[in-house]
Image 1: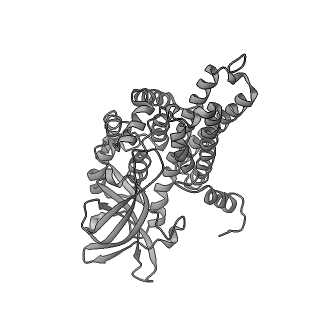
Image 2: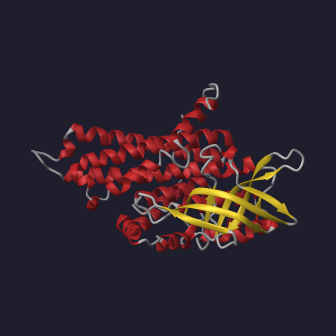
Image 3: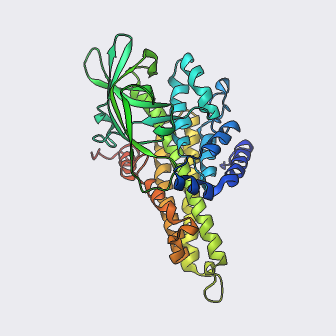
Amino acid sequence: MSTFTETDERKALRKAVAELGAKYGRDYFEQAAKEGRKTTELWQEAGKLGYLGVAVPEEYGGGGGDIGDLAAVCEELAAAGSPLLLMVVSPAIVGTIIAQYGTDEQKQRWLPGLADGTSTFAFSITEPDAGSNSHRITTTATRDGEEWLLKGQKTYISGVDEASHVLVVSRTADAKTGNLKPALFLVPTDAEGFTYTEIDMGITSPEKQFTLFFDDVRLPGDALIGSEDAGIEQLFAGLNPERIMGASFACGTARLALTKACEYAKDRQVWKAPIGSHQAIAHPLAQSYIEIEMARLMTQRAAALYAAGDHMGAGEAANMAKYAAGEAVCNTVDRAIQTHGGNGLANEYGLVQMLAGSRLSRIAPVSREMVLNFIAQFSLGLPKSY
């Protein structure tokens, strides 16, 4: 019988990242969010230590590992209370797509900065009228000689104010049929005709969300990443890592909430014994532990399948991991708040601030309903429902 265990290298990576995360912690994260600052110091230190670039190929300054290593970094920082949301976007999505589909020149130009954290890239796919239906994307790129003109709009795009470039999912016209097909472009955030506005969110986070506007943004020919003809394949090369990273982010946050709840349940005494001795408190927390561990295991499986090149298997596992982690973090934060009673809603205890962020895990980077549609259709063979 085979058993699943992480490698000694992965375990050592987790331990080292956990130590870095503990150096900063939840107070640092929440203070940065409160003051409108970024967690730049943590990002730079994580980059310098090689943690942001663990999955970037060695020849471009990375660690040569796989998405599972990067997901472990993401999870441990979240569990320490100082998550880095842009890890999901910059090294995981953009880094993966450039490493797999970029030209040699593009890899040499962009990957070293992604690896050491000196460059931060955003990723934009969601549009106001398309939502989860990527076939309805209307942002279009039109050839103009050797250059491209980009026109359209995106919304709920993370960290644009911290990024030097945005990888934009747009569409180009097929020369033969005239049909639109996906294509990916790297757009400088200071490009003429590119503007963005912040969305006022109720989430405690130093990272902001934006609506983007592309008004005939002129791009050089080499802004196109990969081929004009392989857009869907290239797109999903980035979206599966995004789901794996989103699941890791949620698992780490759930672990943090559970740790807080257990510490409080051991110390808080109302009757003759700590409240953690009561099954009404203990059982929900035990249930959360089980849910978190199952989500972590599925996340690790998704990462292993992706690293092995089984993209259909990885797609199924990444969707299930994202679903399981989203449910686990929502349940765990809710149970942690209930364990604390009224204190659960006091800022001092650091749980109420996690409420909106945990709820986001059921919505992004793919909604739980779309995951269920995927599983129903592809895993169970049921008729498509939408």
